[in-house]
Length: 383
Image: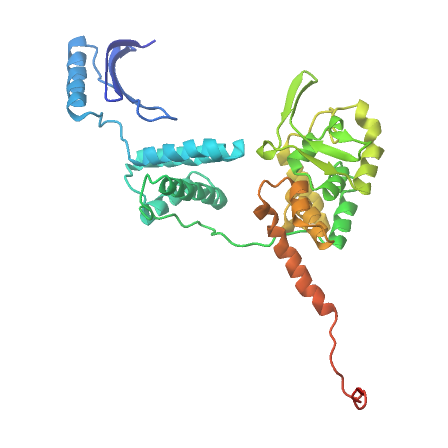
């Protein structure tokens, strides 16, 4: 147990003299930084109280004179990062997005403190990339961290905390490539269903193809969310206890929505309805609980899709994309699709227009009219 002998605070810094394990230590802490603790403790390597107090008083005088404890490195970047995290907590719609921003900024702060970084430059970004890769991060994860840095710079520019162009933005490793959403053709859908028929995934895939539900929404779908009389389901928040455990679910962006069920989806639910007495969930595991091991779900689906020859198009999200693209190609309007998919911004839904546009470009080549030789002389119409 440590014992505080002396303590002094000045300009948001705290200095302590501590007796711990038969030796004296000094502890310096920066209280100006919110969201993370900046503290450093070091041993004075003495059990002599007079010598220890002399060291404490020297540090105290230095703090009074300079207004800061130089032993704790502090960069002006810290305030920009705090601005960004505060903005993220207010404006981000998903808790997962906030968590991602916080993790990215935490890694940046650690890098800044380790390397005594004062300003972000292209050279620093390259060192940061290597730092993250050496930690075992894949290039996609590194790009997520770099994208967060770009967001941090943009937010501070908009807040006029820094002039525009003050910090250059990092270049991603993989770069942003405009990619058309991958989906399954009708034949590929049949191949997938045929390969999945003998697995527990069969009904989940069928239902996903007919409703466009996200994987996490399929996993958490309850019988209580189904309205058989009206022929629709509700994607909504809940908290229930089952089997001695508490299970909670909150839709992405906290937005509930109602999805009208087509004939195939409704027939599937009717065929499974006898299982309602065994579990509150529509697609439970063998213990009657939701399949929360998403890694296993991804692994098992990949096995099915590999056998079907479509594993290169993505896993669970490809089911949702297939639902969306085929609806558009069969005449659905964009706003209706946005509501079915639960997109908060229609620009997200518009990505599927690129796919349907390409489909239409190919479709017009199914016919072609032109004048052919050998059909005889053309006789002009009489007026």
